[in-house]
Image (cartoon, rainbow, N blue to C red; front, side, top):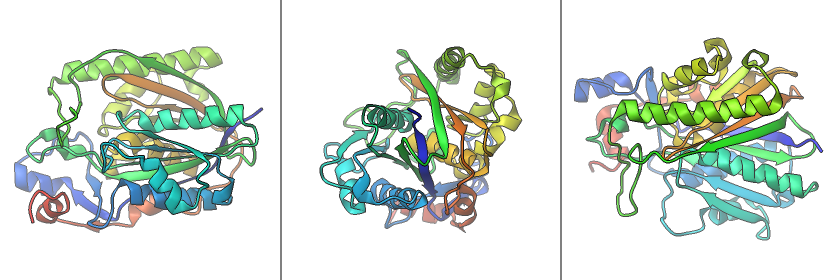
Length: 338
């Protein structure tokens, strides 16, 4: 039975801040290759973004919320430490209360983690339909350079065994122990990082390349057989480094490189980038997807595009819908000043 993506969409908050505004305030901007990033408004959070993008994804099929049997929500910046967040989104969208729902919240890998559990549900329930929503706005101290790259965004996918846009060809994962890079203790409000770049990059490269290589081997594929590659984007430089290690080219990466204009979207990084690749992919194109979460772990998924149907709200349209703010307003939106 073929399973895959039958609908998708993305949502990007309209506010943007340019790197120049950071440079005016700090004298530097520590987010390689990022020209500007997206910012949540006063009346937004990851739950409102997830609800909005879930509705759009269902409309893109189209399918009624009542037909959904599985819902998964992914984010590293949930508004509650203990509360069923997926239930909140499920209820607001109109998905049945009997649909099995789950939260995936402890890693930037959570977006692909949620997608894989959604696919597993569809595989074991051929008549089932899963929806996965990843929405994130990672938070760090304004005094920490890690904060410079952090953006906001969301993407959602309808997963099923019919009316497919992209068929799932397979997936592979790799996990290991790398303590100290990008973590948040239970009692801490902000992300922490030991800022040992060589250590963090070593972890990222080890996990992503091993997950990607495992999937290529599993499918008996070569990198050049893919037209698009989607890689976790903590900034706009890292994806190219990972791609080069796996023998992918900048041209294969181009359709998904959203971090230049949006920043680091955390658990929504790969989902939004995948939506961007689907927006431009043609029938027959193959898409390699590789996520990463510090700590550390990586998921790799392979898709083959089987339909030229697109979502009505494309990622580029969302990226073009923007309003620039200065650093003072940014601080207010982040709650750093009143």
